[in-house]
Image (tube, rainbow, N blue to C red; front, side):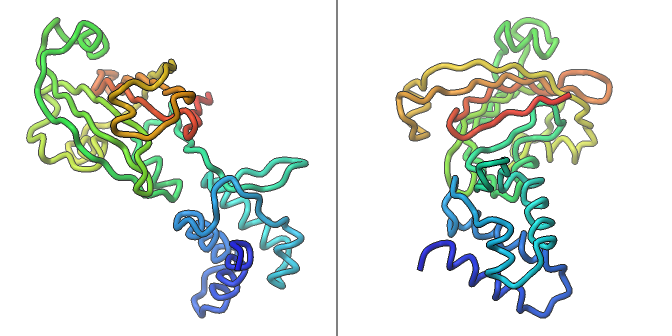
Length: 247
């Protein structure tokens, strides 16, 4: 049985469940779960609204509402003249004041972190400038590999003033969740992006063709007093990420 037939069977089974969720919600949840589990291969075209309507015996309005919800969550991409396909890119907002883990969870993905280093270091001139600290000030260096659905997607270094972190071991998956628990309010970010080919360290942790560049995203996060609370440098797979910086 191919993935489309399996999807139709899963949708019909979900529709038959007796809970009171609207039909379009059941539809959207089923498709999102199928994408997350790998039952629907990424970058695949979905059946049209008309085909879904006929195959499932539901109205096109229901299908359209489900597709709108899936598009809002970046599960699918709808294009005029081409069709609707599963989104194989990770949409990350450079403007939104949310961390990586929070943004990925909102897109229905499962983020995880493998810590490489948690230590105190003397900051470089670049770090001291971005965090507005005196030269050679001590800062926390948090270095980790970011995973999505068990696949490594980026390596990230975060530099944080030592005054903002009590016990470094209290930070597990998300630095921004830790900030929230400490009543540190993330207000805005400033970001810039460059690219380079993958180096030896990146290839050691993340499988990537030598022909695919690595995106380097440098970002400073500011609190509600407009003080810098984090300077991060992320090395991301260019074949997976789409960065959004809308006004």
